[in-house]
Length: 423
Image 1: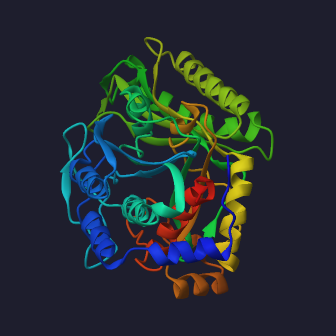
Image 2: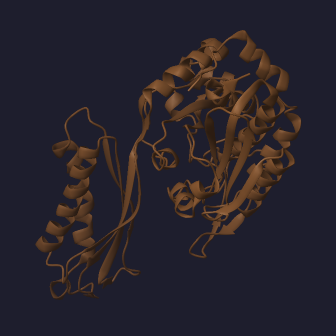
Image 3: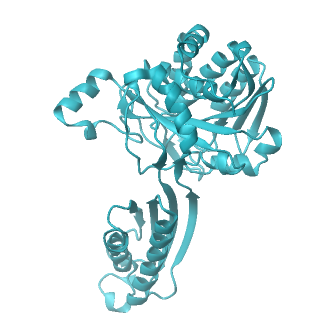
């Protein structure tokens, strides 16, 4: 694969063909105040697809739900896939922005929820739309095939798989390299890229504990699932501290425990929602096996009337960036962003992006860029309070529009030009 080098010519190319950002800032505000939850991204996908059609991309819609794939054939050369995710979160926005979301929508279960873009997917969509226009305008200077994917349902870690299972790669060429980026709690204008571990694998489980209900005044006649569930939640925390090698990352969380309705009735069942995050496949297997062992053992010890139900509801692999691809990007990014290319640590968050690459055996890289106001960030660094700044999934998460969008647009375009053949 021929690589473009991060020289002044590449910088000049991006600056020459970067579109007027004013309309895209308005698109961003529109998307931010009109969030759509996973597998409901009807309007967002229509905006993205309409933009690609105006640029003469070959456009495929409704892939795996509202997924969009745009293909721009531009002569011989590598095939580069760029991906942005579209869905928002069921969260009430508290940013106070003039374009803040006040939307109440129905989730996949038909329950009304507030919704907001608390993970920056609105910046991802907008920046990929603008970068598609930049690369289209600069097409006389490169050759190859450019693919732009707008993916649904990343927050459920289901959208990439849904697109693949719905025949994504029967509709579009298989890529030689797959790239994506994510806005994070970093100083706006900065970019970070690293080889190897970036994001953890994620596994979520629904668990049901079966007891025997009765009057709260006569617990001796009951099998209390709340007591059993409480011991399970507590005992699960011993997995990381006692069964995982120190220094190896693993997280076991209980995000929901539901049982009963009133104080004087012992219910007959309890439901838990559990989440596991790991990097190493062997640690992943060990933690999940231990989790199931503890659940079954505590139910046996508590006299549960039947074996617990443990159902895995989602699973996504770790994001492990390809070393050779990162080195190529570091060359162009280092030349372009200079001192704004910064170091960052792996995160314990998770993504399903890598499936778009591993499904076809392609190398992949995801990098991150910042969205925190410069003064806010610098003050927090000086005071040692950066951990208190709103993070992704916070109701206060609010990337500043610029230079966040500008950095993201340049970054994803630069990523594509690193691998497309230069004319």
